[in-house]
Image (cartoon, rainbow, N blue to C red; front, side):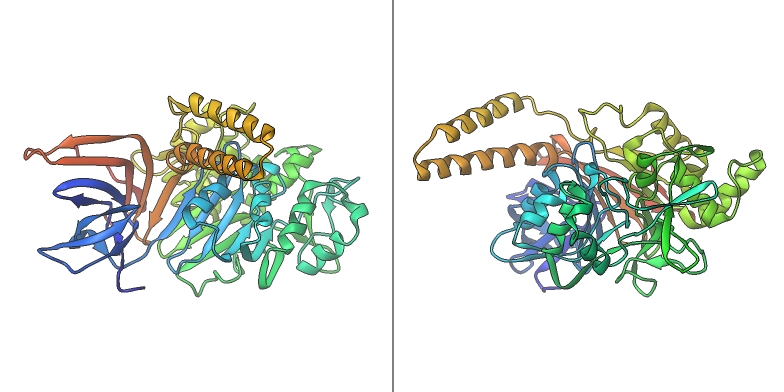
Length: 504
């Protein structure tokens, strides 16, 4: 760590100028110290602000950071490790995540590299946003991971193998060579968007990078990990799904899932969602479950593979046994809610996870009413602690009062650009349009929609930006500013990580 870089202390810290507070930081925020300490105060630059901070409000340790970005109806998540590696897990359907990361990391002036991109499954509201990343020649990815299922012409996932009452997806894209061989035959996929996206992804790999399937063994004694994040590391990414089965020749295959967990018809959507990449992120003593669009059929399949117990449970005692056995593998302190708060889940799986905090990624204009009311109720009912926390990207952000005027300006600028013949003037108008769109994004998505999770592996903090800062004054008339809504999670009395009751 450079000598002049520090981080804000738990749970938050203040930046002052001439005695007044001018900035409010959350735990782990980056701070550059710009001069020597005087009387316990140091000059700093942070969050585009110059000022001074108390020395005791700075720490040398960098945290694990997870940002759940408001991508609308979809998922988009950024992981920044304590050693500054960056991983994207899903990217939504549009360019919201790209714009957020461009704002944060500034994709200009040379190549920017991400350690990995993880596409949990081939649904557009999880993968389509990667198109903008793969179109940017300034970006590189060390590795691209996916769940092995490939969208194809004809049969939705390629060759199907019936076997008894089941049928299987064969020809999974396990390695880069598998994908390259598939993409070489355009008759197999044509204009299908997902394989064409991965074709672009191949061109954005860093030297030595690859595109491969993430898969779990389903055998508790031999867990699988994302390459580079195995059990020897403080930060571990344990793969819980998908869990392939092996044919007689040892080749992996995935079973088609049915439209109901207790039977029914084979279902395309249930299959690709139910075999989402499911990752348990473990940092020291804190665990975070990231679950794609896992559904009830997928949950039942996973519970069966990991516990060896039949579904449905015969009675309440059998269900309790399954939940306790499942908790050994799926139990987590924090969970990214599967499938945007859909009602397609089992209470047994949710009880097995038993999170103290859950993040729902959902959008406004969609026909599914995500997050469902019963889902929110179940998250609270089966959560851990005195008040289980439920966060929502949709609820953390709302339309600005003056946004209508800004949208009208966007429309007028587009009309001017279309009519303008002079190349220089057209370029200037385009720059003005891009700046206005970035401002809209910053206000609605970057500023107000992102849910920030920070942890040192012992305690954790959630924070999201208040839509209007609270300003108060001390008895001496000094201004105090609160810009963040903050929720602290701690282990008390040797117990699990839970939300800490705030002092009143």
